[in-house]
Length: 305
Image (cartoon, rainbow, N blue to C red; front, side, top):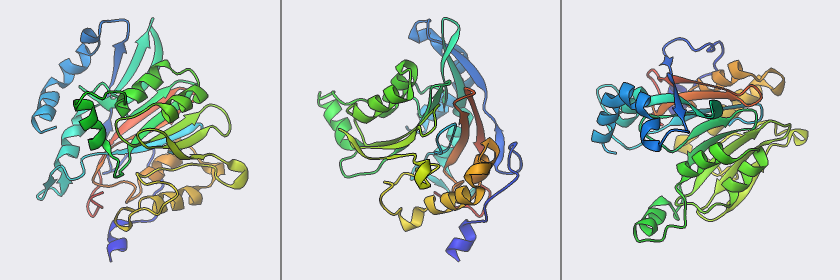
C-alpha cells in the first residue's frame, strides 16, 4: 500500500516542462565580479527583497555531458498540515534564481541559487565541468565542525563556499576534483562532478577531512551514469527514503542510447525522485555551457521526502 501510493511508473513526455509538477521558469540575473561585493547583488536583492526578508524571518547526478539534479530542502522545518507541504520548501521557491557570474564581461560560471545566499549548491563552469553538492549525514557531522569554528578552530571550509570557489577558480575537471577531494570541510558532503571528456564523472563522498571511496564513471563495465540521493553509494538507502532504486530503474529503462536532457527530466519528474521537498530541478550540458532550472511541485499523493 505504501509503495503503491507514493511511487509510479517512470514518467515520459514531461519535457519541455509542463503540467502540475511544473511551477515556473527560474529568472536569470547577472552578477558582475568586477564590482565590489556590496554592489554585485543589487538587481537580485531589489527584485527579491520582500521574499528575502521573509526567508530571514522564518528562521533560518547524473553526470558526464548531462548533469541534472533535484534540489530537495526543508526536511523537518515545519509541516503545513492544511496544504500537506514543507513550510520552508515553499518559502524558498520564490527565492530561486539563476545567476550568470561574469568577469571582464565574460561568463566565469553559472549557478542556480537562492537570492541572498552567496554559497553555491548547483553550478556549471561552461565547457569545463558541472558541480552539485548534497548533504551527508554522519556522526562526525556539521555540528562538530561549526562548534569548532565558533571556538576559533577555523581550518575547515564551509561546503557551499568551497563549491563557489571551485566554480570560480578551477579551470578543469581534474583541478576541481582535487580541490573537492582534499580541502578540509566543516561538515561531510557529497560532491557530484561532471566533465567534458568521456569517462569524466564521479561522486566524491566526503568526511570533514578526506574523500572516501569515490565512485567513478566506468562505461566499459556498465556504469554509464552515477547517481546520488544523500546516502553512501556502497550502502543501502534507508527503506523510508529509497529514491535511488526508482531513479536507477528509470535510468536503466531509458538506456544510455536514449539519454538526453528530455529523458533525464522525465526521471527527475518521477515519484518519489520528485517529492514534497523538491524545490527546483536543474539540467546542465557542459559541452554547450547551458544551465536551465525549473520550480517544481509534487501533487498529492506524494512522498514527504
